[in-house]
Length: 145
Image (cartoon, rainbow, N blue to C red; front, top):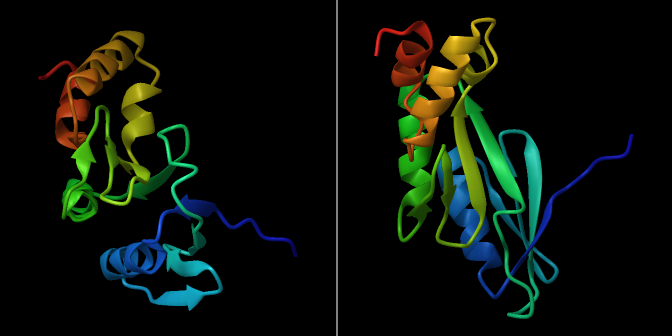
């Protein structure tokens, strides 16, 4: 069966990046020809030490869906460690330039639920957030914020 492996271009930091993610996600980094690889939550990622010609942009991101606010906090903080930059609405860029979205699995209930007013309130609340706050999104949706 064919597989898809995201292939990210870095500038000499492939093994360090793979080791960084291995530490966060409890996996192993592997040195590869011209780069490194790591498995992140069941998805293999390959990093090429391609040089400075191409840089990563937020046009490509990796999304981590988690079950609890504690997990949002854990992955958010870990991915920002050592020089990452928080973004808006659950997005961040880590120290290697990789864009991530850290989202609770319940987000669809609040942004896509049957109550149109609740969806609007939840969306407006999300627009004010950097790291997503699942209890605050729920409260916004339910109108109890």
